[in-house]
Amino acid sequence: MKEREIGLEAIIRDAIVREEEARRLFTEARAMVQEPGAKRLLTELAQEEVVHKQRLESIDLKTLQEQPLSLPEDLMITEILAGQRITPESSFQDVLILAMKLEKAAYELYTELERQTADPQAHQAFHWLAREELAHKGRLEKYYDEVVYKEN
Image (tube, rainbow, N blue to C red; front, side, top):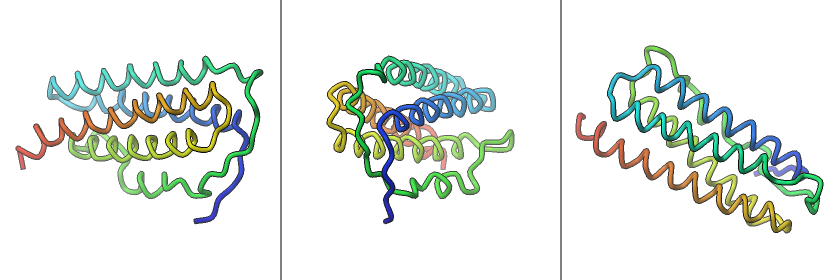
């Protein structure tokens, strides 16, 4: 897979945008589902994305040991989102599947960033974020198994 180099500051700014997009997805999905447990789960996930964004925003960009990092040129976001936009017609199953895929992609991205960065502040933040995203994916998978999978 082709890679591109991008600066650490740009990556952090991009990650802030991604966390806001995830919060928006969970908030919009919450408004579309009826099941109380689903609403509660999506509310919690949206709130946690706000915490992730705040964690990234707390990184002092002025003190970063700026370095170029190699990222895959194609982060596969288009493929993840292909045909999976959340609409009023989307089922809760559709929402869960999309959310699980996005959390997995976020985990993989933060894990790779953690592996590559030499800056201690950024390394610690990426480590924490990777674990958070993996925990989100696990919660979504558990909910899917307990609710959606049992219904089918």
